[in-house]
Figure 1 (cartoon, rainbow, N blue to C red):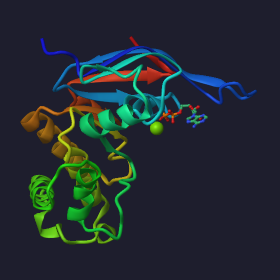
Figure 2: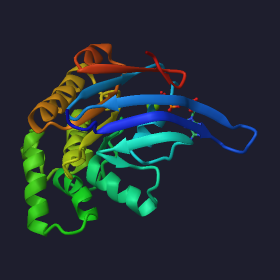
Figure 3: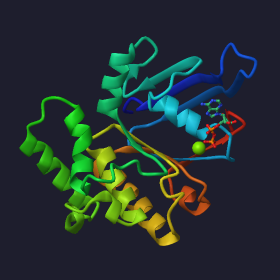
Figure 4: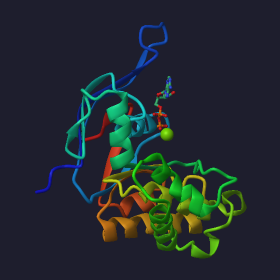
Length: 227
Ligand SMILES: Nc1ncnc2c1ncn2[C@@H]1O[C@H](COP(=O)(O)OP(=O)(O)O)[C@@H](O)[C@H]1O
Ligand SMILES: [Mg+2]
């Protein structure tokens, strides 16, 4: 069996450490995700799902426990090494797409490649064009993000997340802001990317119909995984 793309052991997270309002919101999370799995993360609002995704995405540090991503132990890494690992291995899709509204769809998808050194301009453009095509937005490649519908913007966000060919895509309620039909399209797109490229997905959703169609569901309640 291939090494797990994600291995969490005893992950804890406290906010406002050392102040009177210190609160622990993750109380020891153990999760293993195999390469190529498409996992749903469900649980009530406030249960710690976004906190967990931010930690897995190396946007925030845990207060305790160990986190291995793509075969690498993240515990001893400094900020620069975390940034490199994040840039190479992780793609993000958020509820609000966080596209740059004045940029075109194509330019938004090229952004993660610009941040990484060593890509020629023409190569970045070709990669971005291929991804825009994969999310079926070729006719909109040169449209500004703020002229596109919510579902289209979220598809651009998915293309952007895939630009660096990440081992895992973390999606935090990516369909939470979409109508049923657009949500379905965005979900199917992620599913097809998972099947065709073998990209691992961790998808936070409140939509139980979508969660049921994932390979596995991880349920978080009050900062713990429900066994
Ligand atoms: N930056 C923060 N500082 C303090 N408390 C936070 C912070 N972010 C989240 N929390 C708290 O942590 C708990 C879990 O939040 P969150 O991870 O956003 O849950 P979910 O995504 O499941 O709705 C909530 O009680 C929330 O108020
Ligand atoms: Mg959340």
